Image (cartoon, rainbow, N blue to C red; front, top):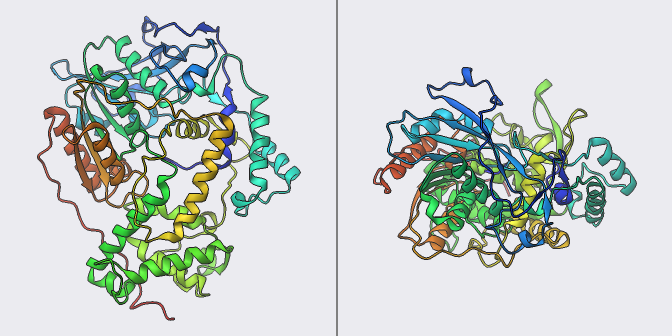
Length: 557
C-alpha cells in the first residue's frame, strides 16, 4: 500500500512546493487535448519487456484543473495554469476480445509505470485478451512537469542546526517539530515555479485524468478498473465522478473513499492485532507460549499477549531503551528501542514474511522493557529490530539525491486533501490501547498541518449518483494493518452491498502481488473471474499463519 519515506512526518511541510518544468500557461477551461499524433519512445526498453503484447507509449495532455471538478480546493486554484502531460502505456490485446480495456491504477501514489512493468504478467493473467492501460499519475514518474522541491540534505542540516533539533531522537513530540515544519514551508514556498498549483494534485483531479486518457485513446463506453492500495481509492473516485465510464472495478488492498485515513491507523492496528491474538489462541503451540491463562473477558483472546504489548508501549512512551548488543560477533548490532517500533509493527504484521513472528516480537519487546534483551538477539528476530528500525524517525537519503522528491510530496498532498469526513472511521475495540495514544497524536498533528496549509476539502464529498451501475470486488487481508478488511467494508457501505463483493484473504493481496504467494495468486484468480463475469463464486485455499514459537512458556515475572 502505501510506502513510508524518509522524513515522512516532515514532508507534510512541502505541500506548498511546485513543479520544476515550466511551459506556457493555458486557460483553465481547456478540456483534455487530443492524443499526441504519434507515439513517443517508451521510457523503458519495450523490446526486452517480458510480454508478447505490443507496448505503445504516448503522452495525453490534460488541464491542470479539470472543468468537471468543482468545489473545495479546485475552486481555490489559480485561473491560469500549466497543462500537464500524462505518460501512458498501452499493452495491446489480441484484438479478438469483446471486453472493455483494463485500466491499471497503481499504489503509491508515486510513479506507477515501473510497477506496472514489473507486474505485467500478473495484469495479463487478469486481463485475458483485452487491452491493458497504465499511466504515471500527474506530477510523478514520466509525466510532466514533475512535482519537486529542492530541499537537500544540506538544507535540512542547516535548519536542524539553527533549531538545535536532534533528528536521531523521536523529536516528533517535541515543540520544535512544528517550528521545523514552518521553516520548511517557507523554504519550499520561496522556490515555487509559476503555473503549478499544488492544490490540484488530488484524487478528484487524478480521477478526471483517467477519464481524459480513456477518451484520448479512443475507448468509447465503459472501461474496467483494477487498483491496488491508493489505486483502490482512485478507482472509487473515478466511478463516482464518471459513473458511465466504469463497468467493473477490482480493488485490491482497499482504502475507502472519504475515510479518515490517518486517523484509521490506530483503529487498524487494534483490529488487526486483535485478530493476531485470536489466531495465536487458536494455535496450540502459540497459545501455550504467549497467551497465558485465558482470563480475558473476550473469548479466544490471548490476554497475556495483549497485556504485555500494552505494557511495552507504555514503557516506550517514557523514553527509548538502550538495547546494548543484539547479536554475536560481527553480526551483532547495537541501538535503542523507541516507540517507533510500534509504527514498524504495522508494516511487519502486514507482511507474509514477518507476520508469523509478531507474537514472538511482542514478547521480546516486553522482555526488553524489563531488562532482558536476549530474545531480541535470536536469529528470527534480529532482522526485525535493528539499529535502523528501532530509533530513527528521520533518515538521510544520501548526498547525491534530494531529500524531498515528487513521490514524497504527492504522498502527503493526496492524503491530506482526500480526507473528507471525520465520521468515516474504522471502529475498534481499544484492546491494544498502548498504540492508540501514539497514533492519535500523529493524527492530530497531521490534520493540524492540513488546516494551517488550507489543504482540506470538507465540502466536496462525492455522493452516489442516481442509476449508478458499476460493481466492485473488494479484496482485503486478515492481517493487513494498513489497508484493512474494515476499510473494504466501508466501500460496501458507500456503494451498497448489492454492488460490492467482499473477499478476505490471509494477507493484504497488494503486498503479495509482487510474489507468487497464495494471497497474491488468489487475488488474481478472483479478480479475473469478477471482471469477466461480474460475480465471484470461486474460493481459494489459503494457508493459516504458523506463528513462530521460540520460547517454552510465558515470560518470567
